Image (cartoon, rainbow, N blue to C red; front, side, top):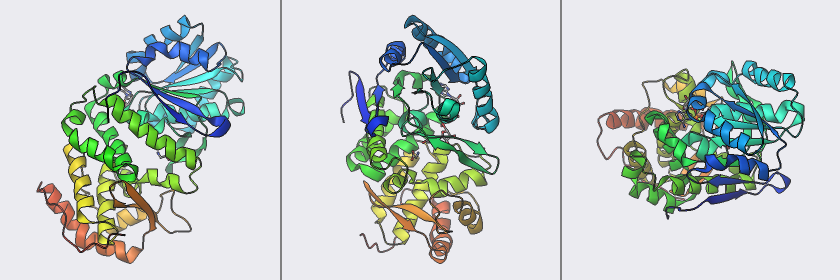
Length: 388
Ligand code: NAD
Ligand code: GLY
């Protein structure tokens, strides 16, 4: 992996819905010209939240106005509660009141929350208006802004209402990550590590070799790291836009992770932290089922822990985990399907059978929990592996 001096462009190839992910330090200053190049009409609604608006709202308005756009700003509250039908309604109210037309664009300036709800507003207003993603968290830069999953939460579950709706462009300025709180930065690293495990052993090695850089947010490394993550996501999405098959691999760590998030009432862990724990546990399940070897599990556990993410499960009962996993979107007719690593760089989607996972939970998960809490390096019990 090389650090990237100039702009890195990643195509997302989806026929007439194709677009580019553009990555470069300082790119925020070119946002006006980029929007002009997309053929947006002269009005743009910037959807953001007070935190991001205070940091970057002014510069974004300035560059858009300089390029000839007139802008309105719609502020959502900070946090997951903005991903609701009520806040979607407020965006739509604003667009109707301001008489936005079909060629007027929406621009999401913020993390995954802002991007998801703004994208859904763009998908639904007038049956679809142009939409530009300007992601400002690491999670959003490497994951949520790419691939067209938009939506809001229902009181009974996350992301239950939404649409696949691709942006016209994703504009990534890694410099905005300087202001990201440490916890949010580290949470994003879980999704980055995920890409190495699911698709690219060399990228995983690169991350292992740059643990200090990752922890210290070394800006020489960030564009390459974000760029490679986006390339992997773009390649997977291009092959399976609506998650009929392969796109499910992007959910590695999420089957256990989502169960943890719900169990923690979405306030114990942020999403990336739950995914980090989920990857360690799903790899451990893979080893228990004889699908991968001990090294595959240990390398992930070490990397996830070394970047500063939690790896241990809480003191929860098997039923808490199993019932939580039932709400995963990969469940088909009650059958839980989980992404399981075969080796670093290759994963498979496997049906999980309750008796086996219950056995894993009582025999392995418990000891992993205790040993990891004790911070010993060799964390996993040995078991003969039958690597596929
Ligand atoms: P977030 O959007 O809540 O942002 C995290 C926090 O960082 C917020 O407080 C935000 O105000 C703040 N923030 C954002 N940018 C900042 C900056 N540059 N400097 C300082 N603070 C900044 O959280 P997130 O992790 O970005 O996204 C999580 C959401 O994304 C969840 O709702 C999840 O479901 C969704 N998601 C969607 C997809 C998808 O494919 N659509 C993928 C992954 C996650
Ligand atoms: N974040 C998972 C996906 O986009 O499919």
